[in-house]
Length: 486
Ligand code: DQQ
Image 1 (cartoon, rainbow, N blue to C red):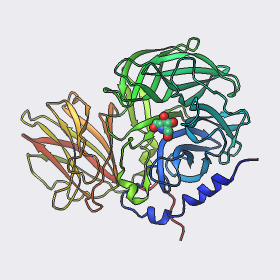
Image 2 (spheres, rainbow, N blue to C red; image 1 turned 180 degrees about the vertical axis):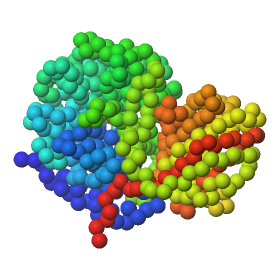
Image 3 (cartoon, protein in one colour; image 1 turned 180 degrees about the horizontal axis):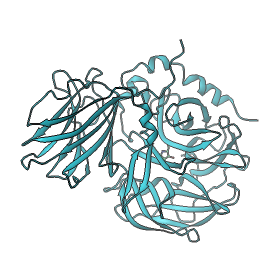
Image 4 (cartoon, rainbow, N blue to C red; image 1 turned 60 degrees about the vertical axis):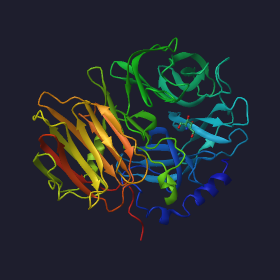
């Protein structure tokens, strides 16, 4: 018998104010978000019974993080999405909160592996299992908790299991810490219920954080990626370590490290393999803050667009998942432009809060110091977000100092023009978000922005000298959500 009561009450509560919440100006059109109230990390990414599933950390009752439930979204094609009933509730004596985890298919059942978290218990974090035949209703396992403590001497932060199959075994990487350093631990099992520690995969140095959250290990080309979200690292917030994994010792030997995203609003990434063999990933499009702008609208938290990851020339390329092109509406605006310093008005025919823009910036004039786009501008130009290439800093910059509400922190990604002096950008703007893919996936910057709803203008600009724009195309994008029923 599944335990229903907490789930049923939560499933009702979360929809109570949906109509009002969903009318709010900062709601997103093509990003995953909760029906109402709180969302954080993506969990349990999987393709099961002909559908993609994304679960997520969810508080159906409020706009701050309370006891965690697992919300649930599904899609047949990564384009159209729908909300499903909440999958997990903190409704057993071992679950004060159902923290992050992952999903696998075992014996035709969709199986979730998650962390049961209880601040009052020692140890506070243990690993648990829940299964479902239909991918919608889940039963917690009688064997729970299936892994009750971290290794001797390790810290009690012991969470976010990511499980995958290799050879005859299941493997699981868990985020942990020891003596003030983050680390990733590898476990092995035959049945997802009995786990043996294989070893420590990787340990932080003094720069890489005192705890690693949401680790993920996956093969990429001829190597492996160990992805994690370090707490309090001065150099990285979303780390991709690329190297080799030894399944016998658990040891991960890094060859190089890379930042998965240079923005402020990207955390707790998780990946999965698509049926056609691509590695795709998504992350929480927020960060841990004291206050959230959208709380006043009755919801908090969203996911980035889905991204495809590949290894090319010793670099992890991160591109928008190719399916997203299906969201482009017909009749884009396109053109070529020559931009003189402080000229305006090139993009008078581009408007909107939900757009994709593909643009090339060519810097042939040595006097030009920087150039790019002003976007989500207000009629009087008092509000704008800048995305530009800074030639001195060799960086694409996202300047939110005049974006409206919310953070004004400047974010930037290193970038070099190609042999034709071109920087290429693919920019996704949704009502309260911006994602900038630099040079065909070499780097990404993800931020939330909160301009007035009628700040929908776009401009090109150059400083110091001229800039060419050999390619510019802007598409309005369709919504991923079902049409409201009449
Ligand atoms: N969020 C979850 C934890 C994870 C953290 C709790 C990362 O499992 O470590 O909501 O944002």
